[in-house]
Amino acid sequence: MSAPDPVDHVLPVLRHVLAEIQRRGAIGRVAIDEAIAHADEYVAALPVDLVGGDLVDLGSGGGLPGLVIVARRPDLRVTLVERRDKRADLLRFGVRGLDATDRVEVVAADVQQVVRRSPGAFDVVSARSFGPVLEVMRLATQLLRPGGCLLVSEPPEGTPRIDPDEVTSLGMVDDGQVRGPAGAVHRWRMLPTE
Image (cartoon, rainbow, N blue to C red):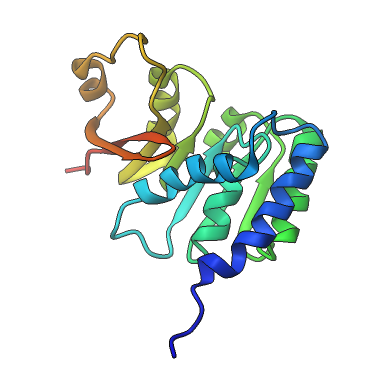
């Protein structure tokens, strides 16, 4: 008999944590399982060769996708950035609930403070509904190590596409998208330094 799947083991705890955060007003009116399914697209979009790396989630809000990544990838060190103190406190509650205080830091500050404090310190930047994609890319280029990647939800239909020349000028390349039943996450990769 094989060992139980750790994802199945953590799901009830993750549901409980996110439901409580939702009850306290930091997650909108969405079914928790649907919210987890969408955040799982971020987990699926993580580079397959990433083991034990550092991830920063910008504008973590109610913990989607940040807390789901924390629950699904216990090998990663995660920084959750949320400028609103009340939401940062809820994220700390979530981190404690997931028993991840030894590998997750919640930063209650503007992202620019993290850029100044930790330039080039991360393997992955994730962002969901943080801002315009090019703005997020500009921040990511300051936070990522060479070869690191940025994960962002696909913008709604009708949103103008990003000019590939702008992406290249930022030192990034389009690394495609991961599409799942709950949505799509686009991945861009920083070019390695020469």
